[in-house]
Length: 143
Image 1 (cartoon, rainbow, N blue to C red):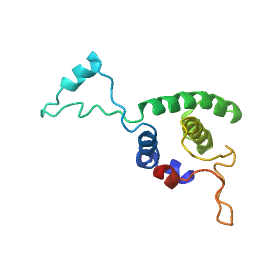
Image 2 (cartoon, helix red, strand yellow):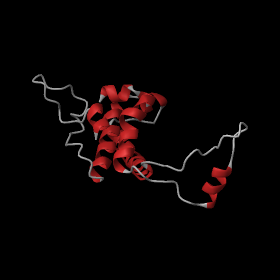
Image 3 (cartoon, rainbow, N blue to C red):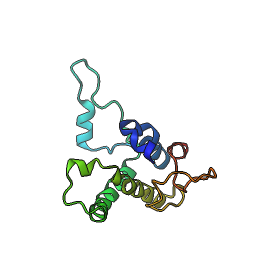
């Protein structure tokens, strides 16, 4: 989990894109007047602003954001924050809550991510080579 959260923006390739592709490989932007107008827009060099209408994973990403909104209240309370200061927002203590929220949504979508305990999710692998039950970034990318 620590390796995953250390990726920052590169997590797109290890976590977010695989989640989107696994759960919703063919979703498209809706055919609305606003999208049609956007599709007609061009940059000054003539290239289209909207290059394609594929929106892979939109539904699950929305569900993950909703879940994270709920779980941040849990984290705030359990971590006894007095505010969501920038320091608190960036704290690695939040990682286990974010991880739990994402995994809970994946399970609801039927993605086999396995079981985990939020307090064990950040634990180091056991000395016998077995993991703590939490999926590794490599497992996420392969699903």
